[in-house]
Length: 457
Ligand SMILES: [Zn+2]
Image 1 (cartoon, rainbow, N blue to C red):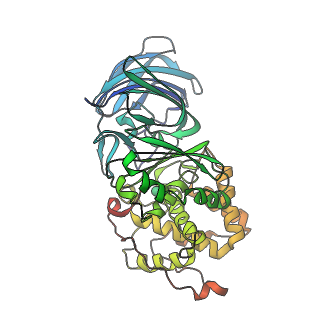
Image 2 (image 1 turned 45 degrees about the vertical axis):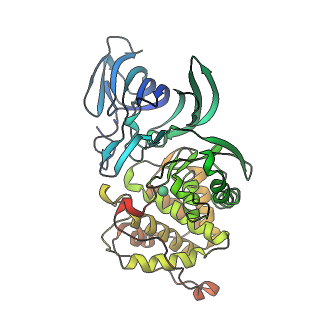
Image 3 (image 1 turned 90 degrees about the vertical axis):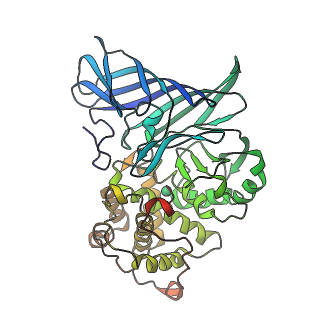
């Protein structure tokens, strides 16, 4: 029943969700979450039942609008709902699910994922299967939906989740309402709660906002100074920014890795040191708004379409901001990657290796090799057409191959087979002109096959 063999226990192919309306009350002191989720979906095949992913929280009541009696049972990761009658393919339904408990991150082969308490707040980091830790969902990247979120919590905290609609304090509790009209998979839905101050930023015409603990103001100001220019460079390179706004949240806690959510990048205090040490990761998370969030993967095996592209965006930013050229970065990373085991297929790395650093770096190298092969003009037209054609939707590696060949006006089968479907690392194409004299840039970040130690999610 799962749509994806990388996450065989997640998702249900019998239906799709169109909209989640989540009303959540969260008490920080006791880590208690009480929620009501209204899930509007549509059957994609005839069915009398659907299952939603929900982990660590207990459903107490399920109501529906399809007629007949609604029954439900719950296992440690599934909420199974039986309808009173059979739905036909295409039939809409609406479920209202009351649920609650003490949310905690799921322990998975990719580390702990989902809703997590901070020292003084909460964070959601779900990729790939953490979303069921805070709401019942069809947890698969191909199922994109719109959202309304109403988050009620203790006063004195700031909440970031999606596009803000309102906030009001009543009876000693503050309710924040958000909307997300851009189609969003469950893993990119998020809630961030903390004692944050917020500051607006003009990001080359895009509405920006930064939320951070007040004591980090100077570090945040210094490290985010390049962000408006970054936005301008990426808009020029990849096409218009695909969302109404971009938010950055900097937590008071240190975090293992920064992460992307829809319209948002989340960084730990350790990532924002005031010296710009991790500028490449600020670029990386911003680039995910085009690659991964707007154009999403339909299945996890295509993860290089998110991570290889975001990694290549780091190199484009380096090139455009006075650092090493993308070519110098590629030469350096090619040499480093050549010393690593070559046992990974980029188009299907397997669930264990899907966040392996080699997926990121080889993915970026494949794009650079494509750029050398088809030239800058065709290469950037491919990227901009990609983000335009699949905006708000999902795409596969085959879609990218077809699009690239069509825009380049040439056959690229052998090229893509070597880079995407074979394990051996292909040589980079011969560079011509001034590029031929470029020296490899030193690789400063450690390369490792340990996925969580060095990769940014
Ligand atoms: Zn990433």
